[in-house]
Image (cartoon, rainbow, N blue to C red; front, side, top):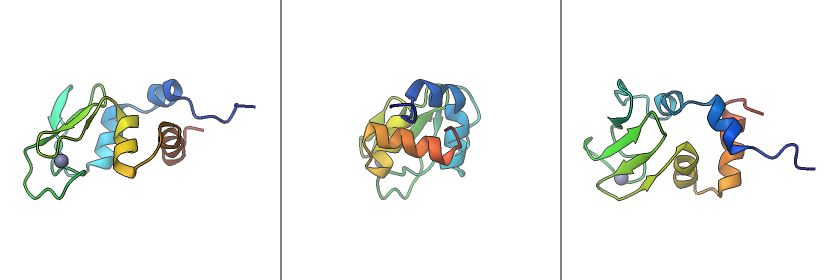
Length: 99
Ligand SMILES: [Zn+2]
């Protein structure tokens, strides 16, 4: 009965953080493994790059200006769109065709 339930491990195995963040942050120079500058923070009214970072290896993100942070791309989607965990998985699955 839960066959359609989005699975976090499946989604994370099919969607690499670097691909996700290159799509979400098209202006950010995501060039190296690990932490990279993420450009303007998407969580607050940012007007100057420098405080927002994303880890393209793990999916973690952190803003040193507004304090928004999380450990993976699911947390990013939850925070950005105000979704519950399971809703964020469903959005990722839908957006990236991982059903
Ligand atoms: Zn911020």
